[in-house]
Structure formats: C-alpha cells, structure tokens
Image (cartoon, rainbow, N blue to C red; front, side):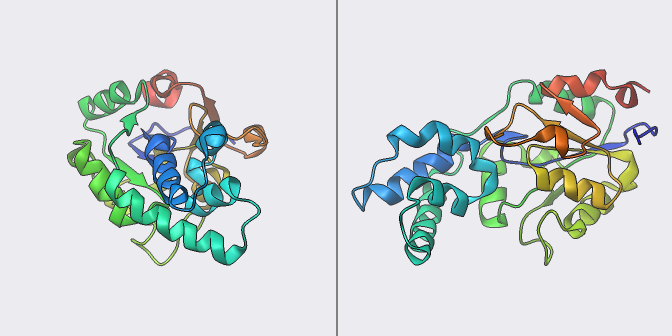
Length: 224
C-alpha cells in the first residue's frame, strides 16, 4: 500500500545513498592488498558496486580464492587502512545537497541509519562538515543490532521525534528496504547508489525507485 501521510522527516543510509565513499573504501582495500603483492586495478568497477555490502564482501570479490581466514585478515588490514583514508575522496552524491537544503528550509529533521561502525561514521561526517545537519546518526554499533533489524530504525525515528510512518527512508540495498518495512516506514531505493548487476530492486518492495536525489521533492507526500 502506498503511504498517504506527508513526510515529517528523512532518514538516509550512508554509503551509496548520502555519500559516495566507494573510492575511499576501494583505496583502503588496494593498500591492504598491495602489501601482499596483489593488485585490484582490474576490479575497481566491480568493487564499487559492492561498497554498500561491507568490507568482507569487497575482500571476497577481490580475492575469491583466499581462505576465509585469510579474507578476514585482509578485511582487518583494509579497516586499518580505511582509518587513514576515510573521507579523503568521499563526496555527496549529485543532488543530495539540494535535497538537504530543501528539507532544512522546511525545518524537517534529518538522520542517518547506517551499518557503518561509529568509528568511521562520525569522523567521515565531521570531515565533510555534515554532522551538524543531522538530528540522528545511528551507526552499526549504536544498538545491539544492524539493519535489517528494526532496532536502529526505531531509534532513528525516536531521535527525529517522528512516527516511523511519517519518515522517508532512502537506501540503496535490499536490507535498507527490509529494515524500513519492518517498522512501517515509507522507503525509496536510491538508484544512484551501489547497485550490482545482479541486484533486483523491483523485487525489494520499496514504495519508490528514485533515479536522482531531487526526485524526492517531486513525490506527492513531499509536496503536501
């Protein structure tokens, strides 16, 4: 059923929805693998599509022949490198700035619900000058659970002081839509994000599929 109540707030996924972090993540993995004599130059395009799926998914795609133990070692090395490069090349997706400005002009509270750990989330937002714009920042370790569990979504809604059904959640992964659905929150797929070739967003059950961030401002529930 299509939502009928006007939006009172927006929650964003972070990587692949709000901020383009793929270059930083891929560079961290490249640095981790370089010490082992492995190059990923021919896999950068593939790795970009996996940036929303976490460090392990990127490692597995880069070195599928490695054992699970070695992949975990590489993942930890990637995260150590990411501490240094986090935010160096990250940027807002085109159109996000206009969406944030429009929401703030309406005094609409904004928040982030991400599966990125807080040790990376807050430094990234601070380096980009974004932290002050958001009323809520829910990271992977803010609650006991990660998306698609409803707990981080409910905490995000609480911190926006809005009922979940009055909040739009934007995300670029199936778990984002599942998390929103778990709390009856309207959801839209960020089609500008890190969708892989085998993703099937039409099957995820989102209320909308949006090709550009500013398409949010054309939704009837935004304009009411």
